[in-house]
Image 1 (cartoon, rainbow, N blue to C red):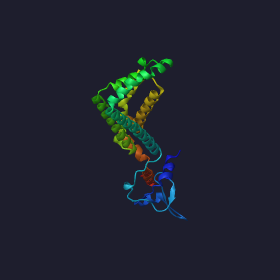
Image 2 (tube, helix red, strand yellow):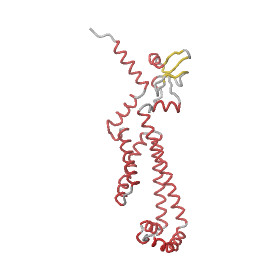
Image 3 (tube, helix red, strand yellow):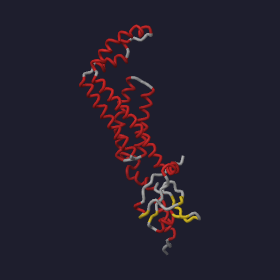
Image 4 (cartoon, rainbow, N blue to C red):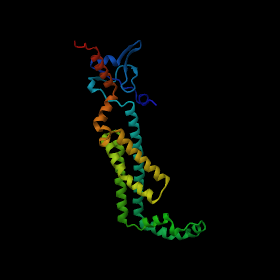
Length: 261
C-alpha cells in the first residue's frame, strides 16, 4: 500500500512554490492544460496553482512514506487507548452508582443468593467455592470510603489514557514517551494477573501492549535507542521531498563544479 497516495486521495495534494528559482523549477511544470506543481507528499504533479508559497525553509514538513505509516499506527493506538478510557469511565460510573445504593444491593444479594442454590447444586456449581461469588461478596463487603477510592483510581486511570491518546493522535514526542512509560508501568500488573489466572484474553492484551511499547520506542528512537532524537530528526528530514530536491541541487552543483588543476 502506498500510504502517501492514500493520504493524498483523502486529504488532497500538498503543493508549495519555493522562492528559490532553481528549487522552484524542479517542482514546477508547464502543461497544455496549465501549470502543474509537484506534491510534497506523494511526489506526483498536480494541475493548478500551488497551495502555498514562500522560502523553502517555511515549507510545511509533510509526512510521507514510512513516516505516514507510523502516524497511522500511532493514531490507531490512540483510538484503542480512548476506547479503553471510555470503558474505565463506564466502570467508574457503575461503582459510583453502586456506592449510592450499596446497602440495598448487599441486602438483595444476601436474600436472593439462597434462592439459586438448588439450581446451582443440580448444575454441579458449588457457590461456596465459586470465584465469581467470592468476588461479589468481597465487593459488597467493601466500605463506602473504599468504593470512593476505587472511583478516584478509575478516574485517574481514564485520565492517563485520554492524555496518552491525545499525545499519540497529535503525533507529539511527549505523547510517545508518555505512552511508553504508562504502558510499561502496567505490564508487571498484567503479568501478575496472568500468573493468578491464565486466560487467552489476558495473554493477547499483554502481547499487544508489549508490541506497542517496542514499536513506539524503536521506531521513534526514544530513550536514545537507535541514535535517539538526532537520528530521528535526520530521518524525518530525509523523507521530506523538498529537502530531497535541495540535496539533488547541491549534488548537481558539485558535479558541474570545475576540478582544480
